[in-house]
Length: 402
Image 1 (cartoon, rainbow, N blue to C red):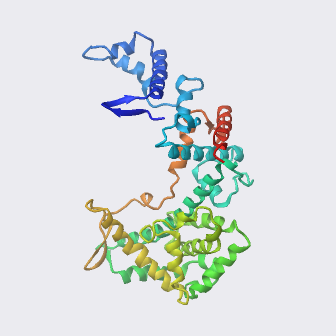
Image 2: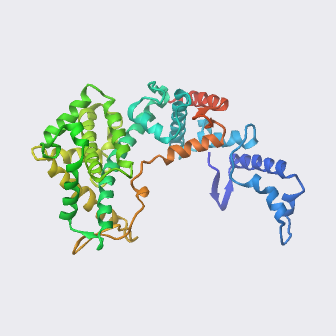
Image 3: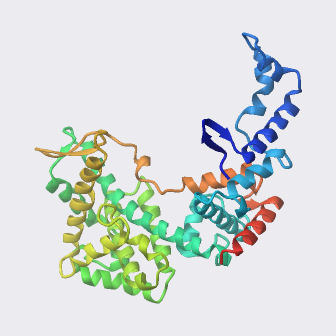
């Protein structure tokens, strides 16, 4: 269902022509045929402000209202309910988007108005529990996509853990007059701060950093064996601590460390039966996949946990930052750079640019569905009558792929 095809210049497809005609009919209806619009489209050298104001609300980006001619077409364009109209070259990606949006609609439907933001969705992906405390039960058509979203979320845990350690490194460099510190100074600062943390004491007992990596890993694994949802609950709690800008350095460092242990334990317990486990192997060391993180951790079994923490700060934070920057050359993208004095802060960053959970795609999806009148957000997210009918059509459309 392409909007335009490139032949000699750009040409509208038949579907795009329908969208254009529907839009035009609403513009004509709103501004009055032969009045402001005709004046703007004429050969006159100037246009009055009055005429511009007259058409502005009709031609701007705006939510549609029920029964506007373009509403049905835009819903079809977004959700791709009729697979017979798809271009075979792009059908798979459009159908995947359609299933994901249907999955988000099912979460809203089953939550009964208790979902308020994308963050609520991440809790569901982590724990399979809805905000109304019911278990989320996706339709069979969307079960596979639910598993894909969960694997994506698990990759986010690794990202946030590493970025949290990077955040503390950037803060240290930023506080210094020279904006520079040696690797040993950075390690010393982060390690000394953990003495004040209570997070590791709560989860693995006192003296956590001096404990053998193997014993810490086994303790965390044991906590997951008989309580499968414990992983998601603890991961979400850790993420909340790490994303809180007011979290002290000690708690941020220890929480990031615990999250790496938690994710590795989850992988060791579930790798064999985990749907789409290949997503945690892809990317290797360059992308710090979960399989690589777990393998690295196991190499330290027999060593004190403090040695493992020192290693990940040096390799996941300092060396990885340089590696990523080099990959992006010739664009000068260094934020922390190695020089003869150690590691230097080259460019200050807004913490929101890296110490953030990726919720924008979920929130933007709900905003799109709100603009199409599929969802009402006035009292928590709820499906409208049109939304419920559309979701049922999506279930029927995707049932054939089972």
